[in-house]
Length: 391
Image (tube, rainbow, N blue to C red; front, side, top):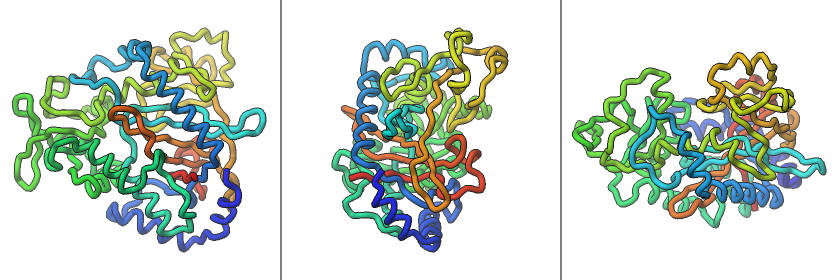
C-alpha cells in the first residue's frame, strides 16, 4: 500500500469530517443510512493495481472463449431463461480478496464475479464526496483507462440509454425504494434521468411493456435491469408481464448473465489469482481437506448461506449437491492501518462491456471480522464500503 499517503490520511482525519461526510452522502437518500461507509478509502500502489488488472484480464480472456459459452449453457435455471440474450454481459464485476503470498507480497485472490450491475452511479458520487470532506491528493484517481467523472457518466449514459429518450428507459427493481442500494437508483436518476420502477407496476400490451409516470402510460424501450429474478420466486412475487416471452424491449444487462457469470463460473476458471473451486456434486470428500474450503450456495446473493467451518456431516446432509460449491479458502491480509487496528479489504473491479469490456471504476469493502460483511463487523469502526485510489 502507499504508506506515506496512509499515514497522512490518518493524521489528517477528524471525527467531525467523517460525521459531515456521512450526512452529506446520505442527503441523497432522504438522510436514511442503508449501509456503513468506511472512515477511509483504500490506496492502491502500482504493484497491486497491476496485479488486479492482470488478474481481471486473465479471467475475461477465459470468459470470451467458446468453451466458456458451452460451459455456461446450463447455468440459467429453465424457469428463469429469458429471450433475446446478447452475446456478453453489459456489466461485469470481479471481486478479489487482498491477501499476502509466501514472500509477504500483496496479491489478489478471486472471491466471486457477476454479470450484473453494481453501484455504478454511487461509486462515482462517493469519490466526489470523499474529496469534498477529506484531503485526497489531486493526482490520485478511482477511475481507470483515463476516465474522469464527466467522461465516465457520459459512457454510462450512452450504455443505458442507447438511442432512446430518457422517459422510454427505466431502472427495473423489486420495491426499489425499499432496497439497501436505493441511493444508487436515485443517483442514476440524477445522472442519467431514468426512473426507478417496481417490477410489479409494469403493464404488458401484446409484446410491449409500459409504465405509468405523471398519470401517463409510457412505452418502455430499454430496461436497466437490477432485478434478481430468482429472488422474485423466493418471495412469491406475482409478475404482471410474461418476462420469458419475446418482448419488444432491450435489456441493458440481460438477466441471463446474472446466472451465466456468477458463482457457477468459478470452477471453470484457472489462474494464479483463482483459488481451487469444485461443484459439491463432483467432489470425493476423502480427497480434500475440508478445513481449507468454504461452502457456497450457487443461488444466493450478498454472501448469504456461505459456511466457513465445515464438517463432513454438513456436506453429506445436503440434498441438491449440484447447487453448492466448495471453494478454497483465502486468508485476507490485514493491510489497512487504522487508529483502531488493521483491517482487511475486498476489491471489486467494475467493467462496462459494450464492444469490449472496459475497466471503469472500483468498489472496496473493508472488514476487521472473520469475513467481509456487517454481520462480522458489529460494533467495529474503520470498516465498511468505500473506494480505492491509485496513481
